[in-house]
Image 1 (cartoon, rainbow, N blue to C red):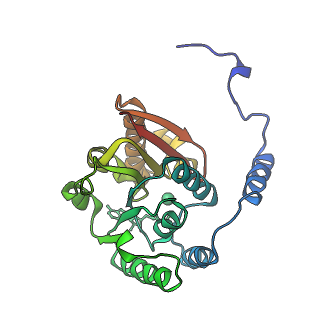
Image 2 (cartoon, rainbow, N blue to C red):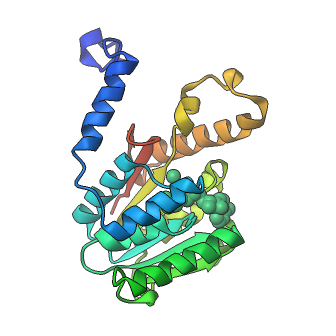
Length: 241
Ligand code: SAH
Ligand code: MG
């Protein structure tokens, strides 16, 4: 184990909570913002306590989509379709997206929102946004790479945090070589940093599984993974060619 001097790593000790809050506010004030349609969709989701992607995660996704230019996107966890329609708005080159949601009410709301996007001219073709209802574990296990492709070139993992580790084998099978896997909410509002014993009993399983998931991502020879603080924490993994 290499012993690094204090000034060789970011300790954050000199940054108090207040300053961190101000840094975040500053970064957010620099955001160019989204289309009016997406702003309304986001507001509606927030008003109904739907856990949609945070501002910093939005910027990260816009950046990664611009860099990667995926042709096929797979999302696990649609909720009401905000992130799906967001990705289809900002991904260059008109990719196709498939998204999975198990909650019936949310799935139906997502279909409504897709229709609204079509009506508003935000989305040009419903076929580019395929919405599947059901449990992701089951649906993923039945899925194949898109027709004529080696796999999906961008996968967004944003469902129940305790299940990421169960989805992983299928997700890696469905991810094309060179493809990106973005996993959201890896810090669970900071809880993941706590010792297992500091976590409430009912959250311990999720805590343990998220730790296992992050270890699997960072120690898998086939992946190169970066853990980021953005939003609620995000992991970006590239499947090596
Ligand atoms: N990606 C959305 C937010 C998703 S919230 C956005 O940013 O706009 C997470 C969603 O995953 C919830 O709606 C939840 O119902 C769904 N979910 C959780 N576990 C799931 C599973 N096993 N299969 C399918 N959907 C699941
Ligand atoms: Mg999320």
